[in-house]
Image (cartoon, rainbow, N blue to C red; front, side):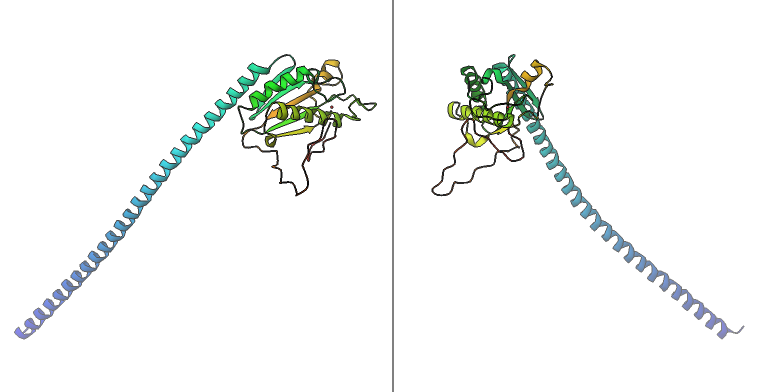
Length: 262
C-alpha cells in the first residue's frame, strides 16, 4: 500500500469517527431535551396534583364540619323529642289519657268518656280541663303542627243523636272540631297550626268485640307532628265580602284524603 493510500485511509477513518461522534452527540442532545421535557411535564403534573390534594383536603374538612354540625342537630332533635314526651307524660298521662311517640309524632289519646257524653260532641268540664293542659303544653312548641282526630267504635248510630249526628263519621268529626275549638278559643293555640279530622270507626286500636275494646276505640287523638311536616294548608285570604267560618259542633267535616266520623 502506498503512502498516498494510507493518507486517504487515515482521512476516511477520521471522517468516519467524527461522523460517529457527531451522531452520538446529536443523540445525546435529543435525549437530554426529551428528558428535560419529561421533567417539565412531571413537574406540572405534580403541581396540579398538589393543588388537587389541597382542594380535596379543604373539601374533606368542610364535609367533616357539616357532618359534625348535622350530628349535633340530630342529637338536639332527639333530646327535644324526649323532653317533650316526658313533659306530656308527666302532665297528662292517666288511665284515661295515654301518650305514645313514633317517628317524631307524639300522640295524646284521650278516651271519650272524659270528654263527651254518649252520642254528643259537647265537651264536659273534665274534658275542657284536660284540653286546657294540652293547650299549655302545645304552647311550648309553637313550630309544631297539630292534628286532632276523632275516633269511634263500630256500633252504628241507629237514630239521630241529640246533637244531630246520624253516623260515626259525623260524630267523630264533630268531636274533633269541638276539641279544636276548645284548644284555640280557650287554650290560645294558633288556629293556623291545628286541624280537625274524623276517622269514624275505621282506625281502631283494639277489638270492638268487647266493651273494653270499644271504650279504647272511642277517643280523641291529639297528634303533635314533626317540625318538617306541615299538614295544615295555609288558608288563602277570603274574597272580599266573604268570611271563612269553621263548622260548629255537630256539623260534618269533609277533609281531603280522610274519613269523617265517632
